[in-house]
Amino acid sequence: MAKMKGAVVVNTDRCKGCNLCVVACPLHVLALAKTKVNAKGYNYAEEVLEDACTGCTSCATVCPDGCITVYRVKCD
Image 1 (cartoon, rainbow, N blue to C red):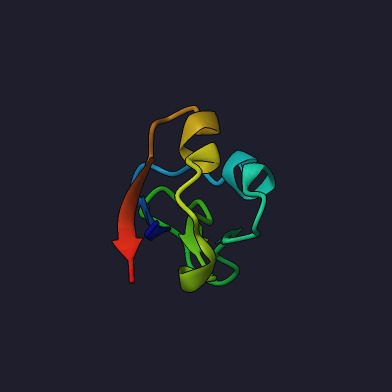
Image 2 (spheres, one colour):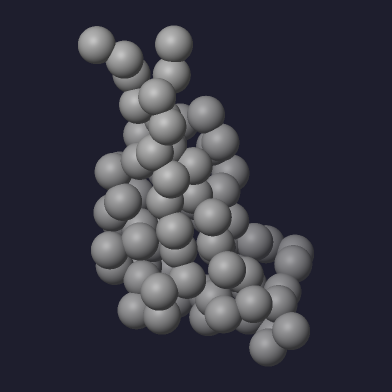
């Protein structure tokens, strides 16, 4: 059976930095940007542990603005 790996894509322009996705991630893959802000002045969520994501979609499920897309790919 092939392992699954996930990749999180955050629409940083729409993200309000509510932190719900960061709290929802069981593997601590996401964090709010500490020094970067989007055009609206919000510290947005970003993927900080790229290889740790399993594609569970917890982050995308709780995002109130639909800013997160999770892709799942098979690994060898």
